[in-house]
Length: 231
Image (cartoon, rainbow, N blue to C red; front, side, top):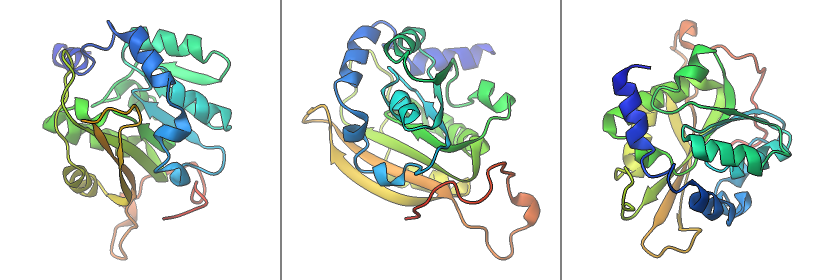
């Protein structure tokens, strides 16, 4: 890892290691189903390969593993990663030390996923990093796979690194990388913070045009569409 990449990781995870115990308690106080209620119908209906980026305490990764999915939890904060492994030791989750915008470890191994989940992650990246990160996500998707992410709106907690990110900007960026928005929802904060709200986006590879070159299609070892319902 070069020095610039190392600095990016430190900045994007600022404040999380020191507060890991408190944050894990906060994350675990709300269920997977409640946090993702706006997009639950878009999660895979059959066992699939799932990547949870910024997995935190492992709440979502563990819930998805319990449903029969093969789950990789990428968490760059060592303290949170250790807590997640301990809290959810009963679930078969593969924990890795990897982070956006590059996700170099997973990409170098040629990993591919049917679903990539980013919960309260995207706002930690600046504009340049978001562009690089979207490219990384596309590289990690199986054909027909989906990205589900949440955007946080509200004041930045002291000691954290966050940037204002709109749904419109994120959708435009996704489209430049060959992804279409298939769902958009807004909701209040599940933790009850009055000054915080969220936007949920589901993205999927755009249908190839009739004139698209076959060479532009990314390979998939997962035959057919990995999801039963298409919205």
